[in-house]
Length: 93
Image (cartoon, rainbow, N blue to C red; front, side, top):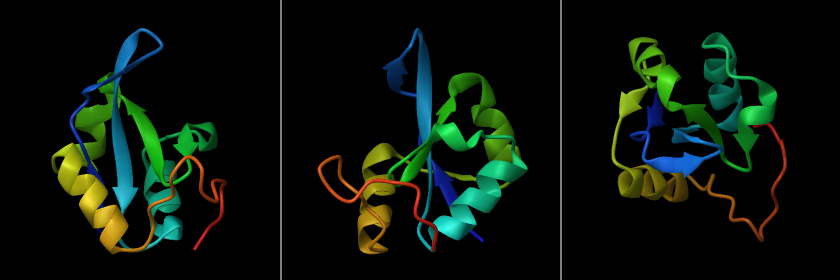
């Protein structure tokens, strides 16, 4: 199981955020996110939004730190990238 997380560089709602993704499956991503306490509402199309204060916890649990551009490349290469105007939603698999 490999999931990836980018640095908390994304502002929103008064804090900074990271993105947590899998390059294998959404099932893998959902399982990892649940194991570190990410609520289902944090899932957006193809990633989980992780607040800055939980970044280190995700890394300790096994998320691999990579840059944002590499994160998108891996997600796209795996065929798991879902753009805003695409088929968003909470599909597993």
